Length: 358
Image (cartoon, rainbow, N blue to C red; front, side, top):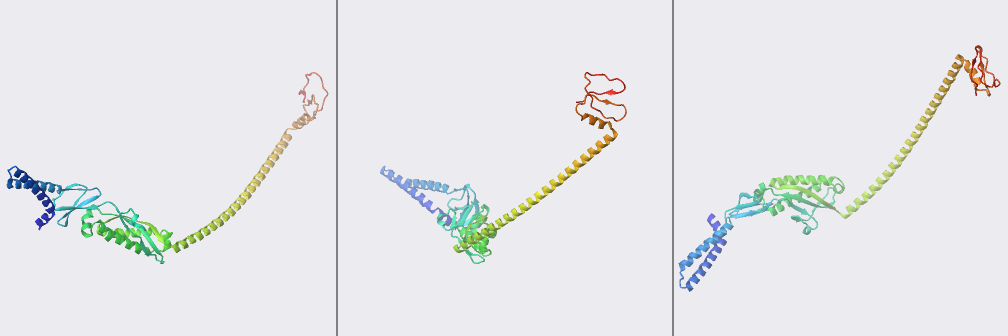
């Protein structure tokens, strides 16, 4: 059975080698015959040699393969996978028997959009139509990023198929199903204006993660690009938003007026407090001045009681045209204005002389 399979795989190469060998042998026989030396055995020998050389060259060409970056090569022998996986590089294989199936291991994309023909995704489809919990019809546009791991490539091909079949049977089927089912758990408003779109995206992603792991496929990400709503619903939402903005504006203006009122009250209270503090400070200043004046009067009175000569001195000092005065040794006779005595005269006796006062 293996021999028949080998012959079947190598049949084109064998036919080509025999054809070239026969052609070369025939040419050699024809040339030698024209020269009178034509022998069939010689031509046949040369033809066989050529056949063997050609077949050897074709076999050598079939004995190796190169695997490109971003892919792995699965060895297919007699129609079945051997389980051997060739990573990027040069590899030897059994000529004519082993075939190599290239499987992409880079991140690939499955995308739903209104115009799949102009999308740059690896696999394209139309949006998912779903219904929200409150009965609104929506169209969901999303992208699934996935990858076939190197370690799982043989099992995935064996159990699911090649990448196109993986997309059709796993990525497309489960993503569209989960996107539709989870949309029924949200209201249209949650998916349109609220945080619900993020929780929706996370739930679908978690569900896909679980489903993909069953088959060995790696989910890189699930991204909701856009959710389209009906025109009537969009208009209603926009009107609601306009009304809400008007309410917010009125509330803001009311809050601003209340704030201004409170500010004026606080300013009035601050002015009243300032006036009160200034009055108290002025009263304290007046009290301190009065205390200082009273203390000054009391001090002067005590000084006059203790030194009565000061009274006489102040009295004389304030008189006009006083030239000389005599201060008795006893008594409290005040200074009297005296006529000018001319040149300076040195007084005698026990009385003390003082200079003229201005």
